[in-house]
Length: 231
Image (cartoon, rainbow, N blue to C red; front, side, top):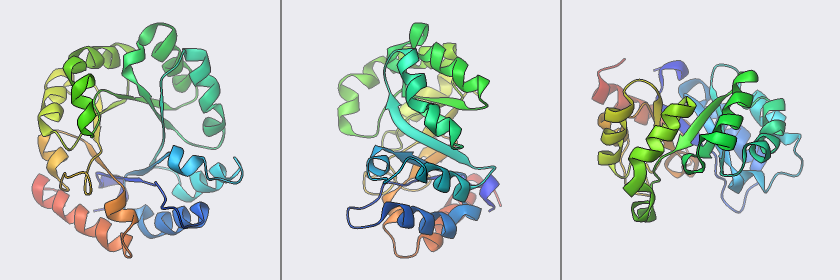
């Protein structure tokens, strides 16, 4: 399975005892041709020595892959736009924001800016940890409505609760992609989310904390091919 056909997005959340740039470049170099993209977030960003290192990471990922910034944005539109401008400048092209902030003066402003810059919005409608059931899952229908109304490219729904993925797919159809975290240490198995209706599985530690990340990615791609009848 080539990178363009893969359903894997690698979450680059580094361990404590590494040089984060070298660690990322090593994993990207080993897996770039086998995955759909990469996701970076605060665990990595707060440890960069310079914002210019973002450019190095984006160039390493290359064209044709999803280069996702996961800040879980949740603010007024103008503040969110200001927050992501450096990432746009350095070549990242997908951005995750919380859907509960709504469209007007919030996600609508952000998505307009993204579209003007050939970038795309991904909204969170449910999360992979157990606390998500306390509030978010009880209003997932409303969060989906916001996501659809704003024209989000994708939504985040948890591999740890396939019933949520099935609910999301039923209600959004093909209007947005579903990206699912929670594979590995959080309990979901590779392929669980895809079988429930997700388009991509976001996988971090199962790949990045293994001494042979390329081998792990190949094995997960094989599982996906087997389950989906691809190859």
